Length: 472
Ligand SMILES: [Zn+2]
Image (cartoon, rainbow, N blue to C red):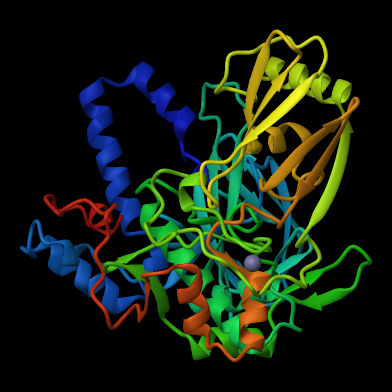
């Protein structure tokens, strides 16, 4: 799950050394308040009005008042933190202070403009800005480019790292704030081939929207983003992108927009709560229980039979490795502390492998022995050890013949929830998008998000006047 970038973590430490604790608390509370009213939420009049009513009396303790309809999703465009980046904008733009919303600079276009975190602020192309967080807003429908991808919406830059007096190199994060339905359209096109039936793509739109809103809901109040642009969350190429061959392609098509529009606002809920709608490429004929990923997944993330993905490229796959190689990988992984659950055993050679699987939706575990000692490993641990490319899913069996291990597997990805290739097959049999979604989340409902009061397990009751707390 996305590890959120904590803004100003280091600066907090610096301030701690020089300012009495009580003053620090007051400052942080003020900062939190300001962030809660971040400029990207200002155009959302209905949301802000509802939030204001929470704070002026509201109905403390009622779950319905924690409802929040995000109109914008925050997508972080890179892993880790950046020390410099190149951005472009082919239209007039304005740069705002992210916290106050005050305009700081503007220009006619940004061409290969460098963003740099300075000791006391940020530099964007020709603009030196004495602030730690900004928002670049292009005029009209112009796109903002970063790293060969071109995005709709705005881009925020949050400086982190050093403050005055600290010798750490200042860094920053780049986050694209994009309207929810625009984001959903692009994810459909990024995640699912255009050749898949439209009902499968509409089902993908519902699942992608649900996932994004669920991530938004569970993000910490201090989080700067909801989702990654990669398959770490869901793939988001932007409106356009340049591929490896240097061709500029559409990351958002008319069919993707149609899939988002025809399902606009529709989400997956279970007993009135929006779920984290995990999904993967190919389940291999049966999805896995949500429990294989996390204890906290919704009860409708159950293992189901999937008839739809049998024509998928990785419906079945094979791999092999020598016993000696496996023991070497085991020893290497132990050094890097990748294997945590079982006490290590130094197997001299591999004599037997036994497999155990408690139920069809659970993951197999393996017991490796050398005749005297034994080592237990889950299929997840083995997959981590041997690589996710080599073992495309955690559903596989092992067979030891002489010193060679034959691996037979099924599916691609974690195999929990919605199966993208399965959705293709089910759509070809005439199932609707809603029917497809409900097949993979049995017992769940597909509802119009804005028409239905939703209750969020993660949302705290509103007991204070801090709007930000009411929303997460
Ligand atoms: Zn499947």
